[in-house]
Length: 379
Ligand code: ZN
Image 1 (cartoon, rainbow, N blue to C red):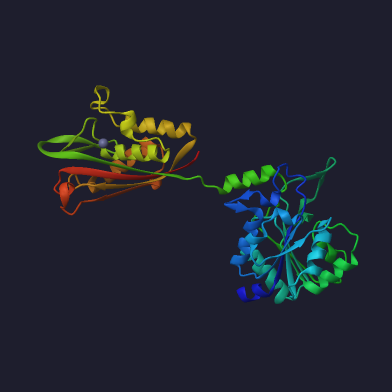
Image 2 (spheres, rainbow, N blue to C red):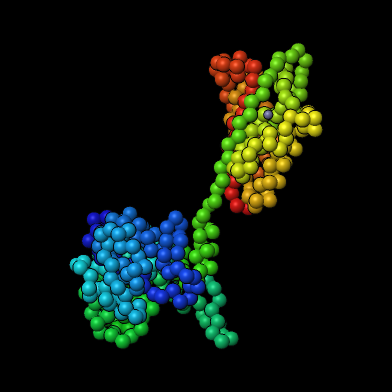
């Protein structure tokens, strides 16, 4: 497949004057993912090992030619059809097949390109054109059109190159919105394959469309880490320990200014960390007011900050290091409590526990520690 790709001429249509795209920048240089629409398309084709790539641009100054290395740039014409015709005629690349694609369609599909090439090369079609079905109601005037009859024509489209050159020459004056129209106009003289595409393949026309698409794609994940450690002492009587907000009976006592809930402290710090809001001690110093204080107050404070920044917890991964108490017997109770406190599903919470293999102060059972790693996403 990649061997065939390297022999196929691929024309990227980046002309167009972006009239409906109300922005100072050229639409094709507008931000998409970590790039812009034009370089996004080029990178995609390079990954698929296309080597004969021609980019049609209106203003050669718009693009930094150096960025695109060995790509062939050809200046576009006044109309779409003139631009494609220019590229077909002037290109240095020789090939039997050509694919033509609008740069304004960034949701490229490797599967679709593979299919187009298969129909051109193996099934000997002259023109392969992808389409999607129309799921919206279409009205002209006040009358509905039977949408079952509609094909929404997309790119990339594939052609036998000498045939599309022939048709472009023949249809000198015709304004075309896509190239497959040339083949349709010839009635049944050419073999045309309409390929149904079920994937989304939108053409960016308005700035708001690109913004919507960018918002969908960007994950804006924030990550925070939290760590807490507390001294523990062994006592003869049963103590009520708080771990993750759950009350646990244990012969261990946690020494702390607050209630010593090492898990909630770590979680609180990780959320504050993800929000770049310093740490728990900044807001809850060891003063009288916070003596013996329920750690849920600390957590709720961090959660309120998170909500005000329109974030929610994506997932949380906890690592508890403890010789005593053992976490396993209390696992469910702790998990349920954390799930309730954070108001997230249990399958987004991971609780791992380990001992310190008797090494160091934690290993001797003098301390209990907890790491929390949290990710936040847009709410
Ligand atoms: Zn603490």
